[in-house]
Amino acid sequence: MHERYCSIDWRKCRLEHRVKDAMRRFIWYRLSANSPLTADGNFKLLMSNQDVLERHPFPWSAEACLAILGGFQAKRDIFLVFRVFYRWASLKKIAGFTREISSFLDDIAAPEAESYKSVKLRNSVFTAAEESLFVAALENTADDSSYFAFRDNVMVHLNWELGLRTEQVAGVDGNHLVEVVGPNGVSYFHLKIIRLKQRSYKSSYRNRVVSEVLAKKLKNLIALRVKNFGAEVEELPLFVDSGNRRVSGELIRNAIVWMCQQAKLSPGTSTFLRHNMAQKLADQGTPGDLISDMLDHTTKIAARYYVQATPAIAKIKARALGKNATYKELMSLMTGALVHRHDATDSATIVRGVVATRYIGNIGVCGLDVDTACSKNPIYSCYTCRKFQPFINGEHDNVIAALRSEVQLMLDQSLDLGENKVVLQLEKTIEHASDILERCKAHIEGSH
DNA sequence: AAGACCACCTTCTGATCCCA
DNA sequence: TGGGATCAGAAGGTGGTCTT
Image (cartoon, rainbow, N blue to C red; front, side):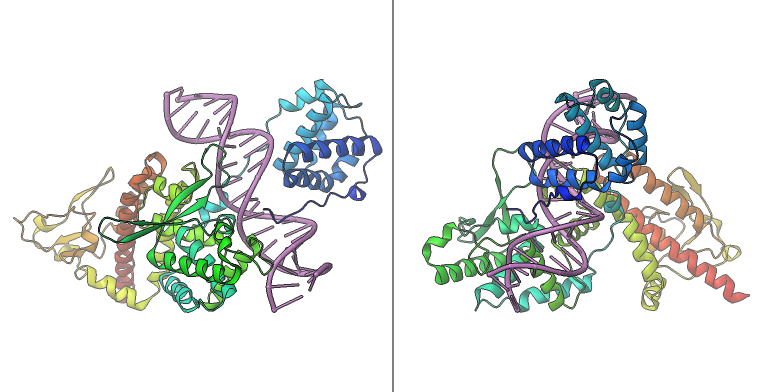
């Protein structure tokens, strides 16, 4: 099922024979006990750090081991592999490796992993325009006259709609599409999708609902495959290559790249489509646990980063939009005209309120009659209200700072990701307040 | 030309430990 | 006592070359 292979070549090893022999036995053990990829990865890490090992004559003392660990460049991974190697060798009683030094190594904390570092910063998702181009390409290339072209289209559609990993797409068989006819005669479709990376589940498949359009495509593709290869292929892989073997992840990736070319977009990947789906859901305020469920994650950890990334994206969008003349015009229509504080004749109309834990009393006047209670949520709602006339020298920056600290507080304390919607709302208010601030600054500069 | 193979790199998971 | 951190392992992605 996997597309990568080991390339363990001991000619690459220039270490002295005792260390080399121990490593050979260790890698052999890893091959028998773990996946080939793991053994291969361990071998590569050890080989790429030979110069560090060479610097310290074997057998290594505890001090030498410390020096070796300190000399490793790609800290964490090689640290763990070296320790596992040493532990194994000492358990096998290989000469030169001692139990004492092994337990000494066990007491050293491994360098920290920087998990999910880049997920947090990820903000490359399709814009609305790109998304419509992509969807249009999915429609335009859905030509079911030949199996292979249509196969690529359906694979990409599947990836797009369900946010699957490539291996899950490859794992679809002809009999995995299930049609359920409802009481009113309407059909619903679900597809059996294989689970990956989830050792705790008893069932290796899970049902995912697919859209009518996709179900239709799948049905057509199954029919096409049966026509080409005979009825018995219904039980077999749905997506196959020219040699009638299940497609590799690479073919699926190529299909996605090809689809992006059709849509005149920069090349995408299956992970990109997954992230795009997850981030769009998060942007709409979808709770993190729902996102992790849709992505087939077993924990909320990864989904949390999509949710946390959302306000950052909102800021970037705000900055980009701020440069756009049309957007500025739209924003200026949202609130009333700018006024000077000394022009406010009736002090009762001045807006006052609390943002986060901060009292704000100098941002503008409200156009409502003095004895009319505002039905909205003053200060929070003012910046998008037509009745609101901002002060040119108002403390809009204080409002923004207070709102920002409120957002930060929510992100820091919020364990329930369902509160994400509130964060989005706050970010929107920050955007509008920032715009007012900009307009006030421009007004002041213009009058000098 | 399609797709297999390769080296190197990034991202995500499940089990277990740890602690307020 | 449940969520976060850690650990060891396994999956995906990139940009090539090789094979059929």
